[in-house]
Length: 197
Image (cartoon, rainbow, N blue to C red):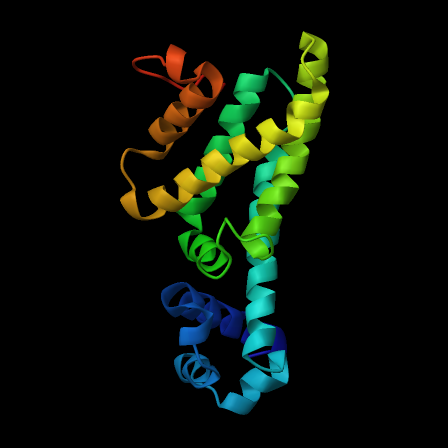
């Protein structure tokens, strides 16, 4: 195995263990054992558990942030909300180990930490879009930050719940999220559907 291949193997093994057991429950010994290498190989590549964990978290953080931000590309605000909800739920669906790592050791309510930082970055992007929409409709632009945090938080917490529930299906969950966000409790549609594409 080349050094690059070995590094990737160790990251894959560590990612699975961190998702399964969390940071505290995972040891360098177990990473080395599952990768069929000696502990010094892991230390050589990452310097220790904190080093390999940091790389795993950085990669997951970037993957989630890229996926979320790339969906916010214009169009009707409801469609953008749908795209963002589907993007987060798609990440949960296809990268559930990564999502477990991000939310396990960095709870949403924390003012610091990986998941909180990612959500704040996403909320900043949403705030910019909402401010433009608020200005165009005569609403107070200063409230865009509040609404951005509320929308992103609602989708993120639902993603945490859906990680284990997995019912209803992703697009139905997204449709209900958008229904609540778009219509509010007083105007919920009885059978909401996404309007994407």
